[in-house]
Length: 235
Length: 232
Image (tube, rainbow over all chains, first blue to last red; front, side):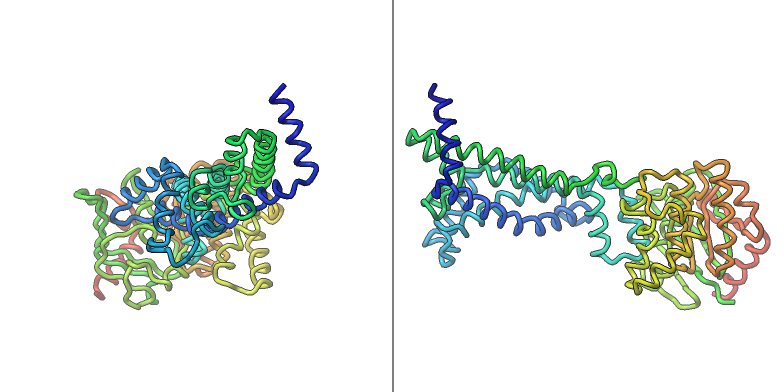
């Protein structure tokens, strides 16, 4: 059978240590992790600030953040392409068709997810947590650390969703990265390319790796999340 | 003796509605007060305003004789005043870490924190729970840990919102027994409550919020109020 054959070939590719295949996996992981490391602190702080402070335009901000969840990644890719292209305002960075360009796109894709989810997590937190921290004399940062620790389950959910969205997106990576072999070819762009060439084994091998990575990373994050009952702020 | 905290012209409004308009509130040093009043009369709100957790209009505030403002809530008061919720929330660390929280926020040396946490746990009778997770604790234990978490900071003023509500039997008696030791240690205590046994504690002065006004229900309090009113 065609499919079974392709799966068998996929496993043999994986276990034979096909250099090109592992290079693609490496590029994907490197850019995704870098993007999350850059986006997470910023987004969680923004989510926290929006959740716990009232300011003019707060509801408009929440509306825009939540609406941007629905933006297709190709559109983000297109906008970033125009910004990074030679004539664009950020052209001098020379990030187009480079891993930095992919990371920039992934940061933009991850930010709304991370902000929206951490905002929801902080907003759902028991208000007595922040009040108790305040009355016991915690600094502004101390209160933030305490609240985020208490809602760590929700914050980790944000990171999990951000990871999922970033590692699985194709549109932006292909437009800004250019799918250059050994440079900017990621797992998803490689799958798209191999499939269009009729090379199903490589595509399936990469699909298997994507699923395995998703399982592994999520297992790690679930362990980090800890006990959801403990993280709800025991009242 | 200089009053610990004296407020004049304290008003809390929600839009058009005025919750209370308190001409004068004077809290003496190392004194205990119960604040009574019907549900919705503003007892908790008053305590929360004093703790800097809610805003209100106020004409003048004096802390140990020094004039200051409530908004933004001054660091001096933040250090001196601790509020305990009716249903205290525990951080999802250990009991000992909960009690150490405020001391750690004040960046005290580790040995000093350990010693004071130990003393506070002994005082509240929760030393055997030091490594317990908060979700395993009973209501009475949480209340005593919350009192220890506040007392360990040696606050000048402790604001307790219904400290015995929803507790009964031994748990309630244990909490009631802790209150006089707080004033003995030099803290002033103000409790919002309905509990007759708390109201009947010796040397506790009674204030009542009624129809938006604060009434002193004992002569001693009334005369204290008059003294300060005469001064200002």
